[in-house]
Amino acid sequence: MTKEIEVECPSCSPEEEVRHEVLKEGQSPLVRCLECGQVHAAKIKIPKSVTLKVIVSKMDVSNTYKTELDSKTILQVDDELVVDDEETGVVVPILITALDAGGKRVRVARAEDTETIWGRAIDEVTVKFSAQSGTEITEVIEKRVPGDYEFVVGAEEKAGNKRLLITKIKIRDGGFRSRKGDVVLAKYVKRIFARKKGEGSGQRDFRRGPW
Image (cartoon, rainbow, N blue to C red; front, side, top):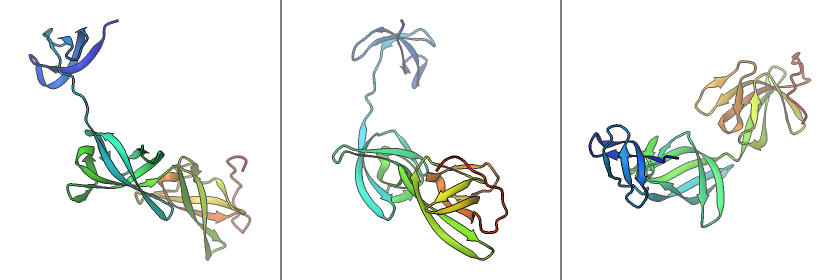
């Protein structure tokens, strides 16, 4: 089976990597360019890694970890990242909330330019409900769930001993989901608006499954 790699070709593509057939293995393998047929020794780039400080918030507590990344990795606010701290043995998925790079706060940066990653743990999250009873009274109820737990507009949700009918979900980018059947993962929820069941809602009981 022919092995192929992508490297620069000194003849037809000195600045951009293109497909090559490997003729001879080694530290500087002999390759043939599949674009122009040029045979040459390839320079294999060994990716550099950087160790970055990561400040992770979980509920009301923040912890500082270190994680190693390829220096060319593009980091972006609202992207997910798995923090793997070899010193402490902690592995935690986070949602990036801010980046410090070049002495300022940015939304996008290469790992090699980044000083600090700020993130929110999403393995488990606490979701807040604004639960309405009748026409005026609103109660704030919290529920702790896995980050990938699904909340569905129009579905019933149980929080503690309360049965709630979800009417609208505010997501962390400031938008809302209010169409029946809209699904939002818990890690993206800012707040859920709901109506208490059995308290004059007059609504049909939408059940998603056993509790």
